[in-house]
Image (cartoon, rainbow, N blue to C red; front, side, top):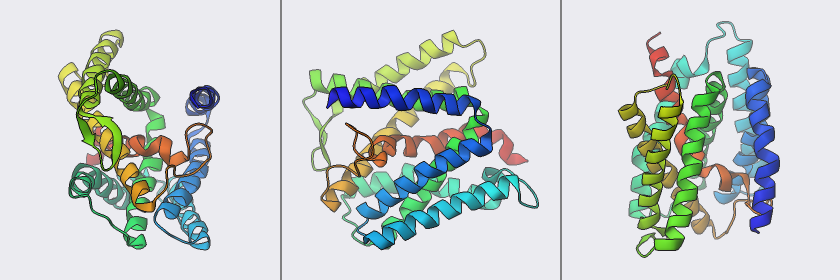
Length: 275
C-alpha cells in the first residue's frame, strides 16, 4: 500500500507541477476541469445519488466550469471570474462554509442524508476549489506555498500522531487522528514557514501575517479532511473512489486542499477586489 502511494505521487506530482508552470492558463483550467468532473461524480456518489444522477451532477459542474472559462476568455467583458459578483459570491460562500458551517457540522455530528443539500455543498466546495487553482496559477509560488503547507501538516500529523498520539481528536469520525498530531502539524508548519520566509528574497507576506495564515490554513486542512471522512462514514464507504492506486478516490486526496485553496486565493488576490 505504501509503495503504491509513493509511486502514484512520484508519477502525478511532477506532471502537475510541469502543467502548473508551463501550460497557458486556459489549458491549465481545462486540465483541472477533468479533475472537477471526476471529483463531482465521487461527491454525488457519497451524497447517495443514483448512477445516472451522478453522471448528470458531474456533467452540470463540468458545464459550470466550462462556462466560467468562457466568461473569462471569450465573454463580452473577459473579466476574471473571481472579481465578478458571481465569483465573489462563490468564494464568499466557500470560505463561510469552511470557517463556520463545516466546523459546526462536525462538532454537532450532523447526519445529513438529504442528497440535495450535500449536492449544493459539493457544488460550492468543488467549483471554488477548482477555480482557486486556476486563478492561483498567476502566482505559482504562492499556490505551492498553500499546497505545501497542507502536505507538511499532513505528514507531521501522521508521524507525530503515530509516535505520541494518545488523545483522539474525533474518534467517531476518524479514529486515527489525535490531538498530538494536530499540535505536531501546527508546530511543523510554523517552523516550515519561518524557513521559507528566511529563504525567500521577496516573501509574499511578512513573517507574522504569514505565520497566522499558515496556521489558519492548517486548521482548515484538518476540517476539510474530517468533513470528507464524516461524509464517507455516513455513506458507509471507506474511500470516495479507486482512481488513484494506494490513495482511493480523487476526493480522498483533495479534501484538505479544497478547504484551504479558496481562502489562500482570496488572501493573495484580495488587493484586486477593490478594482
